[in-house]
Length: 553
Image (cartoon, rainbow, N blue to C red; front, top):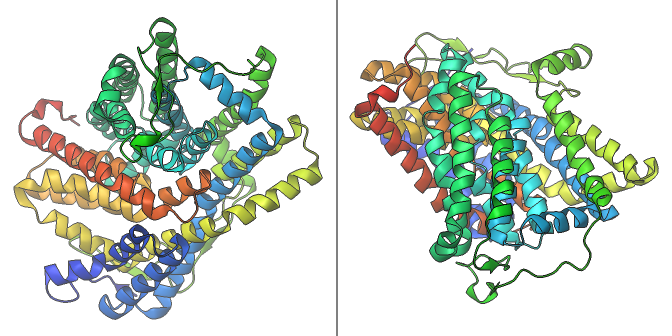
């Protein structure tokens, strides 16, 4: 047995700096644009191993085993989702149905700002609710790049849009994970998050259009932005507080899409924004016309439904794959749990992170059939056959997709290897304890702890599992509501989703903008930290001023 050590240098400041080295190395290398993402991830993984072994005294064999476990977990299920989403996208492009989809969306509106609201925010929220784990960014990024958005716009704006829905993603998986480590009723946690994120469901659509088109461009379509935000925020609150935390994103996104489409039938902006370029990054490329450009050929109703068919199949299958009933049936026939020898239950998490020593599990659960990526692959195969692809052609296209995604898959696996190693070595707990020492400012910094957790792990679920119990213990010591701070971990975490390296790699892969991960990171970083700080301010107000907003057990 090995006990985690949280202050190996006998100095909180120095130990915290040492713990931050892996993530700082990763972010600096990616942001520099001088090192390719997959190489940066491998270098950061090496640094993480050195820090874990040399400074945190983790046995070398445990460190290496943890890295391998994380790398495999990175491919299954995260990389598996990305690979199969890109496979389906390539099939639709090959058959020309994606072009029909672009024309159809252009028929709803040719204004790029309104397309962003419809696709990046509302449609992306649906995929977040149905499957999560990178799917919404992959899908919306691919659609936006196909519609002619610049690669930076398609990548960065998809990441910004995919924030407010994340806490309820994959049918409420982050809430379930948070409940499992805190022992707090998931309905209470879901309701508390539902009293925090709706404010940002109103803000993010405005923020999204401001980031794309500037203040002037945002003001020109404020009625549509308001309709989008309100029609998402209100259902998000009502469903989370009065129904359950599992279907929040599904219900809110469908209502938001429907309201926006209906609103656009009776309202049009005075100026149609036709440029796909980011206004703030390329003023010369931003062009506006008074009238929308005419499509060369309007698709027939049959063609529109045929273009929508692959995505309808995806929605149906992923909704089924996300339910516990289907997962349980699939796992009964296709589950392989592999406890990693020399690692599983060989590490103790100790006080002050947990009240009593707790063994860290290290099991690779190969539930291959119930993976979201497996559902996506099945949807892609069915769609491909319906689009006229032969089995041989499907295999050929899949091989090409693997080649396209190879570097991205390496990067994602390395990212998860870092996340798994930092969790098992106690490096992440050292960072968490540094935040926990904030005293009266803890509601603010505790929220940023959730942001840090997602930035480190790439998952709101993982961040909740990582820091959820720490939030509960610390809040009880400070006389704060455990429900408030546990929910704040998830709400703050959603803003870290746009800067975690895994999401950035998914975005660059979906938009075929390989090697530009640094540009994406630099674009979204300030948006991420600014929104996270705003969540922290809201949680501070709930903790000390608007205490009536706190859900009571």
